[in-house]
Image 1 (cartoon, rainbow, N blue to C red):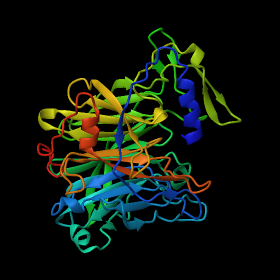
Image 2: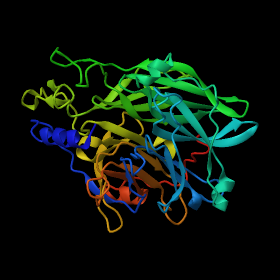
Image 3: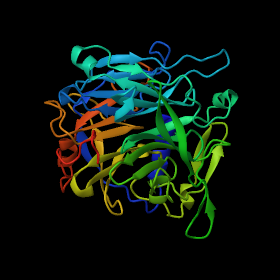
Image 4: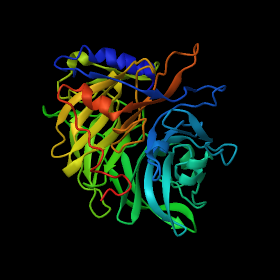
Length: 438
């Protein structure tokens, strides 16, 4: 959703009767990556989703990997400086769509060519593939580019049945990766659809391929408590899509943010999706709407909002991530893109809502607006982030460069997030190791 459409939507929400907005606490970011620009001079770079790779030898050398859509990937150090740029694949033909990198996640210790290999997995929305990049700790230590493409040449489209369908761009969109015993998986959502697919990674002669394990279609329409039916507004022909996702590897649970609906909890049992449960709704849930074809945007009829929406998320619901603590404790975070906040829920039990925060301006960085993706790490990351790290996409990097729209990523110490709440959140740097989640 565009920033202008989000601003209109947020303003409209202020008029919704009974929609009690959470009072977010303010959390300052500590580091930001260089702003990128979605224009020809900037290489059509549009930051979207981050992942963190934890260095096994020196956690202070850990990496932040961020997608830039048409511009591919950037790799950063914990100081925010760019270490490597990877271009998205070129179009395979004159009329074909080029690569476009949407979401990224990390799996550790995948058996590739007989060696344990850490991988950055990327959803290539342009080509409807999952791309895999091996991460070389030795390269990190010596200052060489650490990521190398190891995608199998025969990696097939995730959803499309033909190249013509690929070019229709109902393609791989959101992505969350996880490991289970000796196997690695990616959950991938489909753009403009409510479909989510579970893929199992395969070693194909030292390259990474995948095959489908299961498919889930989330609801596209809903029965409201007053007996009426409702479907969220979307462009004509589109269905309510999912982007932000995260898998709780210890609990075998997928959390999926369906942008105009809310936050789903889906069990994963023997590599199959269980029945989804909607644990929180966006404020707009159930609100009547019309579609303005001239402006190409939804117009919510807030005067007739029946009051069935939630109180913690303003559409779009985005950027789901987990902060791990001992004994199943910790937190589920989701980006409330419409009001520039992040909702915090308990990781355990019924995912009780605890509060919200906003990443605000600091002496070192500007704040975060319209955030698409986020990721949290509980382990110490050297002197820079000894109490863990939260990385968030910022959809409105400032100061602006004239009329150019800039985006970037913000790095915030988890201890700053935890301390901002009236009842401080847990800081637990020892009980969970992302390299050995079991």
